Image 1 (spheres, rainbow, N blue to C red):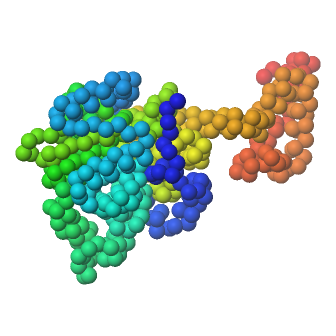
Image 2 (image 1 turned 180 degrees about the vertical axis):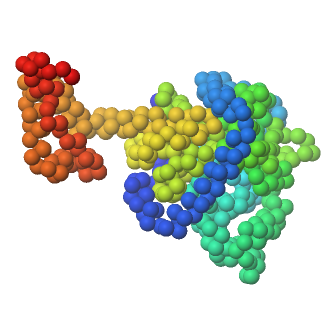
Image 3 (image 1 turned 90 degrees about the vertical axis):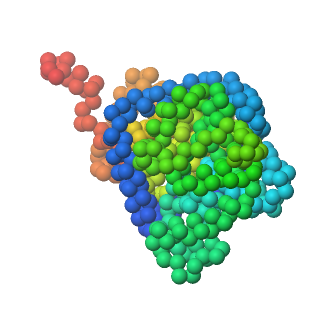
Length: 484
């Protein structure tokens, strides 16, 4: 069977269930204010540029079809990618899980003799806990994406796929910079331009002095071995061109067959994510080019539970994700709780379906329930991932796994079995209907159910039984020729 992401490594599991973490987040009014403002701004900007594209729905369908075809041919495409990267002078490493990926990357950095690396924003490296592994090995990682830098300097955790520091406002960011950024001006103002300028000055020195870079990848083209990173700040371009050694950690689901397929995603991703017509910086590289850019390139292909996701016919849609974060920006649950409540580096609707599959549903059992199933995520997804259907599927899997583990019927299963038995016996069913009518005598209190079923009616009104059942009406009709 495919291996799941190992416990104790990386950031896919929270320390507490979603309901407990969400309750604490809901009490943080500043957090809710920050999130509400940021997600509303992104939604409006994204909606405007999507509205300019007359064939947006056709592009969504094309992106979904390309991803489905790539997952159907995944082993073949990964082997093709490996051959193309190797032919272009790169080296490919295969990592079964987070622990192996961390060992590979740490070993590659040590081999260069360097003790510091610069990093391009990467969900994969956050997923495996690479920064912690590097620090344990005596290597200092420096995040160069502005939001990731804020999170790192604040000893914080990302709360959004695209905007990791979305939960911070500028006053909080100024305080973090004054406290933790080397060489910052004590008179630093809290205006966005001043904060960005301080980060730019700090990072410029780091770019010029660091010889090893670590990146993720948005896409990998199997036919040529080309890797692509899209970003908005230019820090990625600096990391991908200045260092002597470049190490890329990429989830195996990021591979696509051809350059023609890449055209589709370069139209979908910027509009759905940052609300831009195209990414300000789209960097692509193929292996090693003598005298130009890094002269040593390593590609680490990461599984870490992805083949387990691929094995699920319904859940595998989650691997189509292009990390645009559109689903987070429209989700009413995420907007009120933020990303930390999900416990995983992948928050929001996509995290609620991806994290439980990477770790095993039991390790993230509360996440499939962290949704109202309103369907806004499905409507917003640029590759048409049916997140609500996957959520329902994972809820069912959770119930079935609990039943198998306990080897005894759950309360729900026992209730359904009893209901089926009663409905299969007309006399019992008629008696149950008569008994239900007695609850009308209890007034509003009769709308609840006794333990252990009271949990269901604690948040719902039990419908009041009608004064006349169908059986009663039918019998009366037979004797009085009453017509419906």
